[in-house]
Picture 1 (cartoon, rainbow, N blue to C red):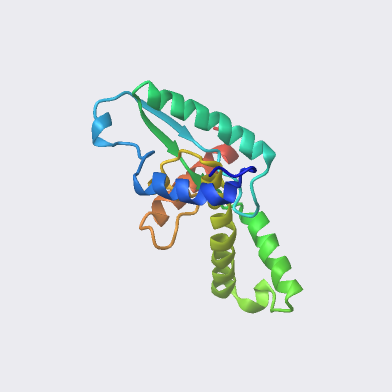
Picture 2 (cartoon, one colour; picture 1 turned 90 degrees about the vertical axis):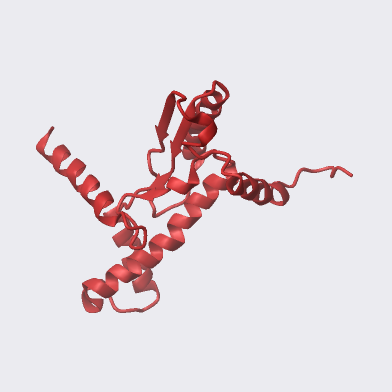
Amino acid sequence: MMEKTFDPAAVEARVAAAWEQAEAFRAGRPERAGAEPFTIVIPPPNVTGNLHMGHALNNTLQDILCRFERMRGKDVLWQPGTDHAGIATQMVVERQLAERGEPDRRTLGREAFLEKIWQWKEESGGAIINQLKRLGASCDWSRERFTMGNRTDGETGQMQRAVMKVFVQLHKGA
């Protein structure tokens, strides 16, 4: 029997998991071999926060374009990811340390403080990606990236070099 009121929580996770398991939105699928490519890279939201209505609108428009191009037979890559937001992330973690009465970043030392930052990234960045998944975003989740790489993905150096190159070019005015 159909419920009187729609309960998205009862549907979203189940449907998203089914889509992900079926690799429904994966680019480069064999049946798309030779198809014209269509790619959108999500302007990565900062890892320090949650998505807001502006993100939802922006991602909805991107999703519409990606789904439309898939229906036209193109091999679509909608690239998901998050941005490192270095200064903002440092400020959030420093504030958390102070609120909990823990040693500050200078007392902790570089390595221990970086470990705290990576812990925060995992907690906060995961929230953003999960919000996108709950929205039903048809991203190729197998290609999710973080602008500073991930210590376990084997691409840390590549991602960090790309970010550094862009920042240097912007600084030089190129």
